[in-house]
Length: 402
Length: 221
Image 1 (cartoon, rainbow over the protein chains, first blue to last red):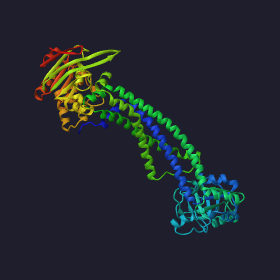
Image 2 (cartoon, each protein chain N blue to C red):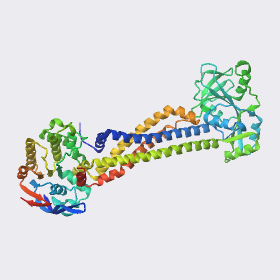
Image 3 (tube, rainbow over the protein chains, first blue to last red):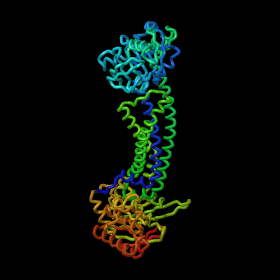
Image 4 (cartoon, rainbow over the protein chains, first blue to last red):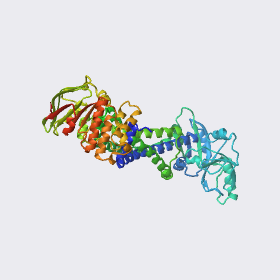
């Protein structure tokens, strides 16, 4: 086996010299990279969920009873189950508002426990196949047939498989499809059925269920609106609120921007903390490497006397810092991911926001970015000590190190 | 081989200018063994560093094989040192995190050396009586053993010139003899030029050319 030394093996051996110091420096980078990576991953997961969720919603504006606006927002963003009703006449009134291209009603029915086998609560959402433009395109693409009245499709988090029969309020339904995950509970924890099926289920519940529900056929929960091309949804929302009494029109952009504001504040806070920790880590690593250079002056002078060029000395110090920072970065990535996956539920529960891991390519970019960031941390922190080490006159370095 | 002309180096200590090397001129032929004897602080070590290109003189020049080494840029001078010159110091000069073998091979990390260096390093260590210590770390060696590793290292790049500063300081009498014999062997077989700074008159007397140094001034004996 060859014993030939290179800068990397030499640097690695040097780092083992003072293990505690090396581990402390590594820990500093771990904390910085871990914090930043975890925060970025968390926030991009929420943004991703929001993007996919609003795309799935497919509506530019959601019209709900005025006094239930906040419940509707909570239902959309956090999937908080709710049920509220308004008169079906609103549908026609909204349809006539200038700028509205098409409308479709939906019914939101309070969650119910499955009567057998399952304990997960489902949010029932009923749509009207003849006018729907949000669920139907999915059905056409994936189910290749319309949904009939004894069938349902389920969100990803509903623990059923296609072919299962599940009863709601005493009426059995057959599961014919499962939607892709969106990260939004409104979709992932919902069961979708036709409005006729929902009205029939409500009627049946009066005789077949211990928890009867009362939904008249003249009632709907929300109107989903698609606006004409070239018209801003928020302008149409204002017009709807102006023209139709007692409703609140929520533009999907508004939902996104509200959450973005919320996330922005969170991100700002995390960035400030990370920046402070990063500066501290830079100073700590920089100071440590100044000490290392000072301690090893004679040794560095000796290397120069053996023929090491200034570049060799510069690379040696930089390599030591880069090994520490990249190792710290990788540990930070692992630790941050582990913490995120462990406490994700708890954090989401308190934030009440949707969450869906970004695509593999975005995830790869995030990991690469975090490693690059940790590498830059090491490079920056050790730059001055490395320059000063390489500039030392060999004889002076040997003498001063005595 | 080595032509030193008017070499001067001064230091300023507490506002006082001290001439460590004061207008030194001498020449050394290829394969010659030269000794310099003198008290501590007489400027011997500084003179070796000037000849080896480790510190820039205030005046004068050092020409090796006709080239003024201070006309080279830093990288060229480093390459030159790596190929042509090696040093033996009066202090422990091993890297604590490297094994004995790695320490001997260290100069080869900075130049273009082949795989055969490792075999040569083992051979040198055997000559130094340390053939069984290749994987040991400096901390596990005695002061004398460490010095012998440093001497082995000084030959790994097959240098034309060895600048030795009190090379046998920590060594017992027998090892000292072996080291001096090795110097003679290298001197005769490889035509290696030696400039040895020593307090030891016996060693100094074995050199063909002998100098004494006092207050930075070099005088032939």
